[in-house]
Image 1 (tube, rainbow, N blue to C red):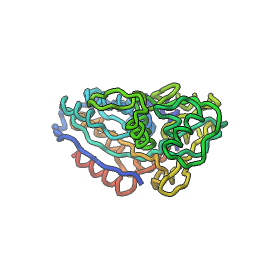
Image 2: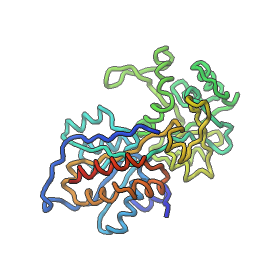
Image 3: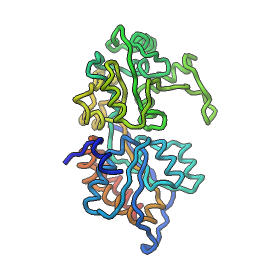
Image 4: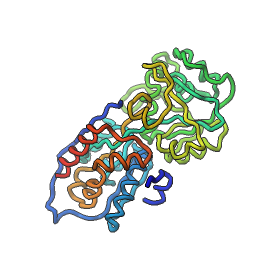
Length: 348
């Protein structure tokens, strides 16, 4: 039976895909393993998959405590590198600076792809928006956005948009994830990375100097409210006549009766493509991305509960049927096989 993202939170407290294992696994004697439950945190987008796996796992392992939390991908990686959790959920790959923190603290991990998501631009049902290209997405959400369609289209035209123009008048209210979210980073990367770089070079964007000494946009996503929980974004867009936002496909799918999904122009084909399981799976929907989990290698070796849970998670059944039930798209069969073999090598 399919379980929705919202229900799961009450039950349990064409893309390029790669697998990376970092560090060596220290194998401990079986008698030295603990059975202290499983603690998972990170992406709110991946949370529905991990939570549904936990629910199914609990049916056969009722005495094992599995805690799943979804504050955001960045928060999950921070906790992983602090050795505070067993597994991090992630809607993007770990960044080099995050990996460096893990390395400095002696934390090793393995990257395991588990599914495919389509970042979905949502709008209130009353919205006149139908299809946007990357330049228009920049105009609507980027650092020069002022909350009006007129300015958004002016910016888009300056950036070379040839798509059907946005509405000529009216304002918008934007509700989005925040910087702690992998969805926030992925949205910029997949939708208007080139446009933001162009405007930075032209000196059109207010900048700050990041930790690596580079000038970056001070506010790459301008919104009227940022929320780590995708359900909060759904509620606000639904309740706001001129509301728009973006989030993972599963949260749109669960609430599609109350929301409108905006199609995105595929520049290779020149056609507007709506997000659905077919277009996300074959990559014609250009905002598709891979979802991951990152187990702490040492926790796999030391905690029998973590190993047992992941043995249940990283199977063909969980990575197909359960991913579908959670509202996402399974990986290609060859990638599922690679994920499973990578896990088996780690588990020993």
